[in-house]
Length: 294
Length: 301
Image (cartoon, rainbow over all chains, first blue to last red):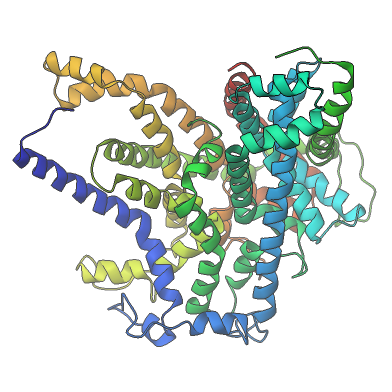
């Protein structure tokens, strides 16, 4: 770019920052409001027509209530939320990390096979896997529901993890395949000549080299699993396995509406994806755009 | 690529087997058996064994007024959301394609709504649009644009518009990223050449940017079509379709919500199964384009 004189440059920057301000307002104002709501007292929150845009004395009371006694807005207003929240968090954390770990392990192995080994059925197996990506998940869910009942996987974390894992497999395998293909092959050749087995090669040579790819796959799977709502809505019943997305949906539409507490619950549900987006965005974007962006 | 030695076969089988088993057991097998169910009269409310009834479920749905109403509504959401999110995505992409201090942070922040659970987004906007204490009311009031709070989500016909707005807010970062990547791959020389030819900003957009961005637009459109056509989470929490109380809001009932209702509320399994296959056919045609592209890129690259 040619260097412009400073005055037009200032004007250009001014326009740009004006546009940036509008864009950020659109993207962030709703998030700001739910965060502010969660640290406001009910009295401040329920002011109208003039709103309090930031509480005079921010409080964490709503969070404390949510996780201890609970602001009694469940099931007609009499059941505390403490149990629901702590188990919801536990279920979300367990289900999404287990899913991400399992997906990363399986996808790395498969990625290596698809990237490096030529055998009959290679392309068919790959296509078989990719074909499920555009399938509206419903066609499987209807019967899967009855299958899970028969297998006694209904309302269990294991069942939830298995489905979430399966759903993340195609994109993860695709990501690992393209990642491993870009690793120079010479090191492997040398190792194979030395009589190294495929397993050893995968664990001690490919995995260290493919670590950034594995991190990306892990994060994408974690985010997808954490954010999922439809799957746990159908396959969980009680707090034995209900994750936060479902817990949050249970709070909505109850008799006594406690927006400050519900906001706190919403913030708790969105904090992990929020932090991941802030710190690991580079890793996430490629996977979440189905590889449309490098 | 190299030839496989025989002992590699064991390795390949052990590595691929768990994946093939999972996908077969949890996706393809149930999908096939859902199809089988769609040809029966299975209804768990009735104590009568399901009978094979051929394509009657499909026939029923295709002559069902509610099915067409729900399909029309899903298309309305798509037709409202897609142009809006493409436009916003494109404008933000143009902005982020400019060089300015702080661009990286802006990009990170703009993507946040897309990374959050859609179920949270629905809730969040439900609270923003609240008629008694909502922030949108407060904001418009302070700007002097309204002098009285409004119940934004009360009128049935506006609910679906808000669903589209929230879906746009949730998804716009996706086309933005795709289009930004497209923009960044356009070489500066093309613009310089256009400038030399005396093309203004608009002419450069038309002659250089748009044609070269077409593939990116196409990819984003296809993916966004399948995503929004099957909208569920946002509708569920924004217009409290489900709630814990269990009533499904009839004014925002989209295809997926309708399908959920048929199967898990009405227990008309056969009919619900048929509907899920109709939805499949409608979105697969478009979705296959994406898979084919990804498959080719993945296998050949």
